[in-house]
Image 1 (cartoon, rainbow, N blue to C red):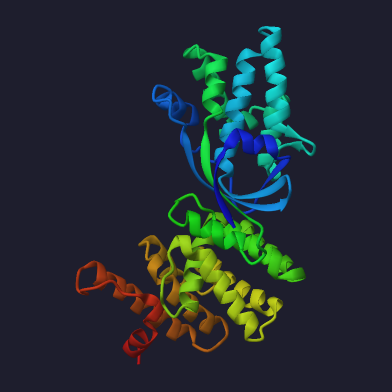
Image 2 (image 1 turned 45 degrees about the horizontal axis):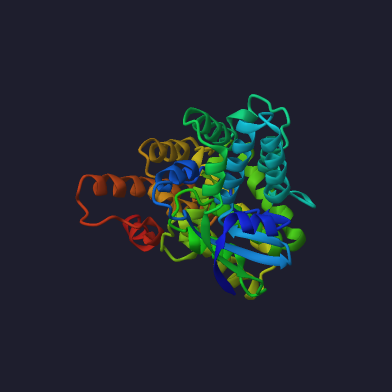
Amino acid sequence: MKIKSLNLLELLNKTQVLYSTEFAGEYRVPADLLENLLEVSQTKEPLFDGLMFMQKIDNDAYIVVDGMKRLISLSLLLHALCECYKLTNNKNIHAIELIKKRYLFGKYGTKIQLNDYEKQIYEKLVKYEKMTDKEKEHPMFKVLHEFWAKIKMNNLSAVQLFNQIKQIKALVCIYDETDIDNRDLYQFLNCNNSYIEELRLVKNFLEEKAGDSVKLWYEFTDMFEKADMVRKIKYFFLDFLTIQKNGIIPKENEIYMCFKHYYLRMINNGQTPDEFFSSMKNVAKNYIKISTANFENTEIKQRIQTIKDNNMYETFPYLLEVTDDYENGRITEETFCQLLDTVILFVAEQKSGNFESIINFATLSHEINTRII
């Protein structure tokens, strides 16, 4: 592993392809690169663009584990510069061709290789392809337009701006070790960022580790799509992992690591991936049932609806366990209703201030059960 201070234009020039990971999430606008350049223009100091991590896979090919959004912004700024001065004079036309050849395109197409919809948007932009109104709503299009507008409004000199871009540097960590897990590294570097998409990390992990059983992961997510609850998958995982961690509630930026450790522990203990997913899907089925108050028994349905209407979502880890008991015949309808009444009472007492501390319903089975004996 080597850490170097690198000029980013030189990095682009010497590289043929920079691959994005599949778990980094959608493009979100980093700090305004052009604005930062304008601020340091009078100091004659190079702009430092932070720390980047890249895995070398060939002499001129890398996977950008962290820092891709900043590289996209740099390439969009170069593209905006070309747009502002195209067809002005022969000298600028020649300079634009050099910029494209050296920094935007390589032998595999665009030097920056993104995934799925992001790839479509980025390549349409730098290749001057016609875009739909929907595509023009993408943050990359908006950033490019803002760069273009600022260059025009400030009447920036193409030569001076390019000379400033040439000074942009970053501290780049380059490694090729196979024992570094890129997902773990990305999560560690971004765990304090609110935008990190933990479920993309989970999905990418399972696509690598679960083999053919990964199809069951898609069946799992389909359950939430059919219930129109895709946005609640994250909350399912928080409650599901709370149960597996004996009542310890993980933070939202810990979902991937907690899930990974739980999955590997179960597999190492002899559970097959199919068995693992089957168990998780059963819990998810109950989670959807609780979230939608979809019970045939009217008394149960009314009590679950009361819990929902009063936003008693902290009770879900416990409800998942007792719902499983009810669905599998380990408790009767009458007992289930008593448990639900007790849960509602507990929350009411807590909100009234009768309890000194917040109740952790994931560890409350014994106390609640005692109240209904």
